[in-house]
Length: 109
Image 1 (cartoon, rainbow, N blue to C red):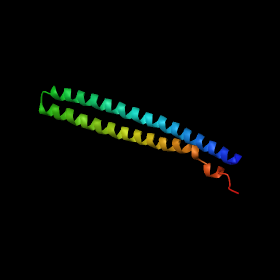
Image 2 (image 1 turned 30 degrees about the vertical axis):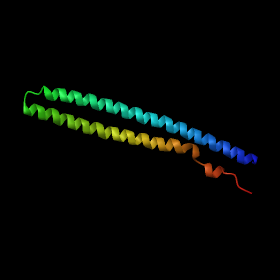
Image 3 (image 1 turned 45 degrees about the horizontal axis):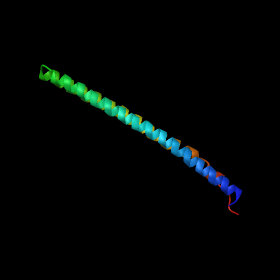
Image 4 (image 1 turned 120 degrees about the vertical axis):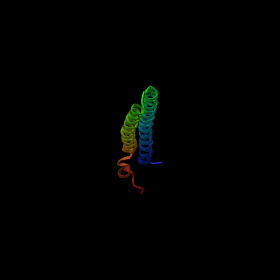
């Protein structure tokens, strides 16, 4: 194997490892974010259920339910946006080591 090919192979391996490390870091951030959201969702659900059980009238119960649904929806939309941004970041970071790789490819003579 020629020296340029060995160098290209090593650079390719280095790029793959950098991409994997970036992917791993971002995947962990996504998993942590989803776990945190799940925990908050269940805590909020339990608090809403407690308020609902303590409601003295149908009107109060409807207000509690309405407040909970609105809050849950807003939290879901915000979380979805955040997760989408994390996935976009994952894709950009995982691709970054490979930018310009084709331009560096040695020519076969």
